[in-house]
Length: 258
View (cartoon, rainbow, N blue to C red):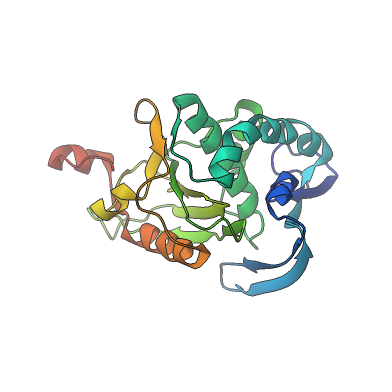
């Protein structure tokens, strides 16, 4: 099996969530890891682990020890204060892009845990060569009151039904929300050019960091899930309540992006 990012062989184990997150676990690093697969042969898997040891064997050593390692090193200083605490801070445009690239890279690797991945090979290659976020991707950032569990995540395959033309076939979408300590990230790849709205209730809980809107944003938001279970409930409700429009329809009817 060739590397998903560059096509080289052989492949090695790549951690879906980086090992440096283990620093937040403290002395007791034993935990239960849960994985859910989508598709016709979907299943749930629960297994014991020491530390955050969730891996896929689809990345070569050159990528693993090269640009992926560099991306983790570049992201730690930006991610650490968001993961470890809830102190009010401003997240600059540069920091927003760094968080968004890290979140999309992580979502791409999460997708590889599934029996049939959804991210196109060309987008994986462009992440490696250009740190490019796939066109149409949205990334929102939020917060959770509880630090633990350090990692809570899942992946969702989405069969689109556009509001303006529900019978038209659209590419399958992919959604990967993740709670990393106090930081909550929601990555949505619709696979097609759309205008996306979400109900106003989410405005107090989420800030879109990709595509970026303007300058710095204040974090954490005033609306936050209290724990990991509430985060998962919010994450599931969000994608189900997203409103998708074709760009031409949005322009004709004055629909704006949330």
